[in-house]
Image (cartoon, rainbow, N blue to C red):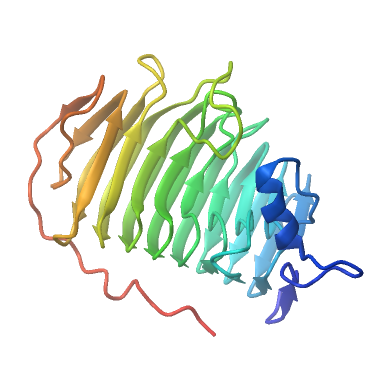
Length: 306
């Protein structure tokens, strides 16, 4: 805790080398594995708190929390470049963890702002509240969901200019059940992928296997999107679907929006939704598209604190 900074120096040259940790991560895109450190890792640590600190330039993930009961992140700032800092996730809780809160924090980084990891042991009972995310890969669940993800509440969140906004990602080699997830009072602007539910995530190796993903009992409530982009609701197969309720989910401008819908069951209402959810493959839509008056996002988009 405190007002200090931990700088992982991921972009600095290694001693005796002409490459940085981030350079090694980029080289690994073409084959092999990167051997680079993470900044803070806790394993089997209950009641762990990060309060009012700044993390920056991690060579890899900034914070990892595994196999623990009770994790609080409050007033955290993560400040890492948007490009050239591969795999620099912000906060990644998972692997059998529960009772987690991430609140009143500011995160911009080169990968997922927050990634809820549902690997072995799964993850449950987590709240993400009153946060501001900037560049990065969004408010993510996955790609590991094979242990299950449940009882997740995400509210009062701004996502300003991320590559992805709201995102659940998995595939057939690391999938499982994601359910009982609620997003409430979320503003997304200038993201090419403002809402993405994707069971064909390609960055985690093979897409097929014996660990098949499904998502159900997902609720989007009071979500506002601006700046255009692609809405994706893509289940894995007929028996492994995406089920989402859209209640007062609105794009707020005339920017171009596109849609990808496969193996999805979508419910509109009771609040309005003006997303054009037609023409899906093996998909259903209950309810009627309608216009509404979105709440303002003006107060949510605040500058990153210096």
